Length: 269
Length: 258
Image (cartoon, rainbow over all chains, first blue to last red; front, side, top):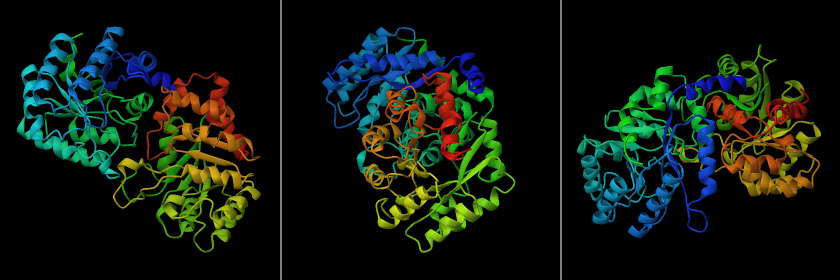
């Protein structure tokens, strides 16, 4: 175990920004404080400086009121954990006009630093265009839930895979879009092949999949400068795959605190 | 000291696996801090005749006998399974049985499977039940769409009361809680790894509480997965050093008589 302690100097000695985490509702529809406490404790124990969180609704078709409640609850968490927790606004692109107003509210009033989209529409769906343009205008990143599901694809019929990201990357080369959790389940090699040559598509390392060679292949295909550290509910696997990856230390340091994304962190709450 | 209960040599049909021969795997594991490892031949999962993989494994680990602890993968639906299994244990000196009902198309409670598990118990070797090889969501379109069935495991525990089982690479916190009751009514032990359980989530504490710290072992799924993901969990587990020693190696040493 001493070896892990030594390896954790990578985290201890460098700035660590976790770009993919969540807060959740409890069974009463309030902020799940117990979950937040566990998350922040995990961050402290692993020398994580910043947790970028969102609160998405993963199923069905959330109404605008649902979306507002998610973001208000996230804001409560951001205020509860100042200095460590940053927020990304959850948006359902189906409510176009309300979505644009909600992005304004979340960024300008609540101090959030990006937009989180889930699986309600492909990111390449024309309905998302106004929203992408809004994010370009505000210079904020979009984090979109992603994966190529070879098993039970009907469970998430509109989940975006790498090909959807590649399409939108060509339409909006000035947008900054994060393909969520390359290790989040699904055929990550498919997605990696699709986004490798799209310079404005980034990915994060989160997810419970810890395939040996995952981080190495992503770095090889995209370069460390297009990769962000993340955990998405799998904190120890997220840390472990960074320690285990056979890539240069400088690349690990770059992933743990991607320089291209530093400016977003300087904003907001 | 760490003993890994779940590693493989061999090739996987659906993705390139590195460090997958005895020399490469032992180097990979040693560099990660693993002192000994239970190993099986992943080829046996997809070969029609699993014994070809078992023989391949024993050839492969020749010269590495002090490091690797070989387990035999047997398909009890295939003719000759009993002869093969006895040969693996008595002649080849293999130390355990590993089963993949979701690849070999049978149920753990089928008569022939029960007969094999009872035979393993009689021969004093444990039965390893990996919940999966790769995560279901990322599998190749020609791969199985099944995982280990918790219902089948619960039933077979009630039938084969003297066999020792090791359940790995799945939601073992869920397994340990569900199987707690049936486990209490049998003389055989049930061990669990934590390869798919996050130490920072309640699942890990729930696993240790339900299984008991004497029944938790270390498994990495190397070389399919990063070993450090599991070492990090043991490092951050809120357990005292004695309990970490049990999980790291002592429980498996006791089970395998090492």
